[in-house]
Image 1: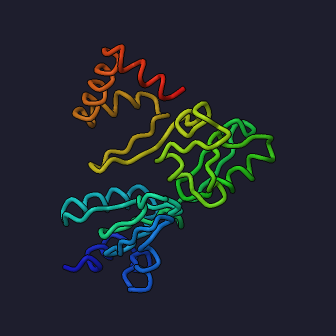
Image 2: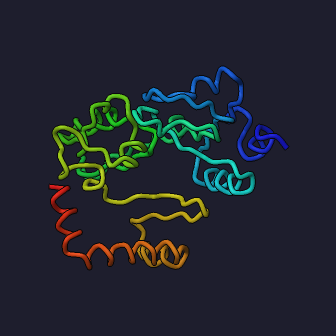
Length: 215
């Protein structure tokens, strides 16, 4: 079965792009690199993302996620299958009078700030491409900016995150018992992360080096 046909069994045909003109439109990002994807898909929820991960394992075809495609390093292109999150992941919910905001990866950072401005607030990070880049890239790159430094970068202003691992495990870090559930579902990853943490904390020179670099 072709890639087009097998992907069409997972998503509606209108959300699987394979025409040469469509693929050419996604063959570059803001970098000077070019890679033409085998297909571009537009999932609408995490159920479809999990199905795409399972398909990737079966077909041995890599997946690359893309939001705005403002990367200067070629992170948003692939010759595998490109997952476009810019169409169906634009949720935005203002919480606590603007003190917090819940957003999807496909909404532009500048649009989020426009909504927050009505409450006298804005996001922490302020990358130069704020008018074009999307939340997915801002979080994935731990975006900062000329004004926010390291105190208000993406990681420092992130309260919680809902994510899906390639295994299909879905985690909402705001849910009660999220850490325990994650450790039970992904014991190898959880143990590996704690081992790295212990390794860093057990080396005073490494601790000081990290603190110096992130001043």
